[in-house]
Image 1 (cartoon, rainbow, N blue to C red):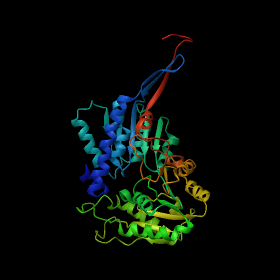
Image 2: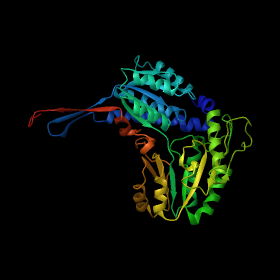
Image 3: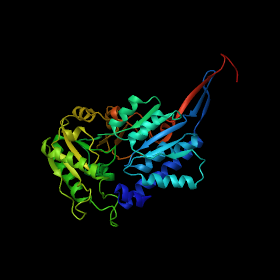
Image 4: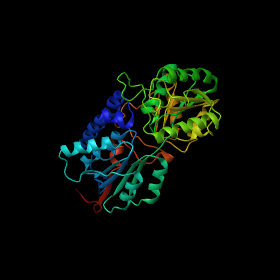
Length: 403
C-alpha cells in the first residue's frame, strides 16, 4: 500500500507507511471495538417507547485522492460490521489503493455484494448513485462545488466532508516551539489536506518575529524530495498529485505575488533544488502582510502555502478567523496559564474542530471530525461517525404499558 501511495500520490515512503497506512489500521480496530460497545436498542429512553438504531442500507461513497485509505474505511469498510453495505468510487487521480483494498476484501471472503468498487469520474458515479433505486445514502468527500451540487440534486441522504480554509490564532504569549509545531500542519501531505491550518493570524507587534520563525521552518526544516528518496523523513514533502493540481497551486502563488500584493516570505515559483526539474514540486511557500480580502486568504489552495495575517485585538482575530465560507478546523496557541481563556475563545470560532496548543486531538479516533458552513455537514470517527449511517426507529407502546 505504502509503495503505491508513493507512486500515485507522491507521498514519501515513511509518511505513506507510518501516517497514511497506519491510520487505516487504527481506525479499523477502533470501529470494531466500538460496534461491540454500542447500544443498539434503548428500551428505557423515554416512557413507553423503545428506540432502535438500524443501518441505513446501501451507501454509495465517492472518496478523495489525498487521504484515500482513510476515506475508504471511514465511509464503507468500517461501517460494514453494523450492516451497512455499498460501493466505493475512488477518484481517478489515486485509484490503485482502492484496487488493492478490494482485492484484500475478496481474499478475506466477504459475502458477495457487501463491498463493491465502481470506477469512473466523481461526476459519473455521483449521477449513477443518485439514479440507482437501491442506493439509500451518498457519502461524498471532495470539493465544495461538487458537494453543493450533490446536496441540491439528490433525494437520498447525503453526507459531505468538503474543503477548508482553517486558521491558527497566535496569542501574545504563544511560545516559539508551539508556533513551529503548528506550522508543520500546513506542510503535511504536501499541503493536500482539507483541514490544514493555512491562515496564521498573529499579533501585529509580533509579526516581524513570527515572520522569521515561519521563514526558518519553511526554508530550513522541511525538504522537498522525490517520493522515492530513501532519506526522506516524516517532515519532508513530495510532489503534488498531478500536473493539473500543480498548475493550480502555482497559479495561486502567482496571484499572491502579483495580483493580491502580499509579501512573499518564503518559497515561490522556482523549482526546489535536488529534485527532477520537470516534476510537480512546489516549495513550501509563505506570504505575509496578507489581508482577508485577498484571494490567497479566501480560497482553498490545497498545497504547501501559508498566509500570515495580523491583528490588534483578540476580537479582530476571532472575526478574521470566522470571515470565511469554510468551517472545518481552527487552532489557538498560547501559553500554559491561559487554558480557560483559550477554551472561551474556541467557543467563538465557527468550525467543527478547534485545536488548543496541539495539532490533533488526543483521542482522535473517537473525536468527531467534520465542518460548519461550506465545509460539509457530515461527521467522521467514533460514535458520531457511526451514527451518520444509522436510522432511528421509535416503537411506541400503549400508555402505562408495563414491560
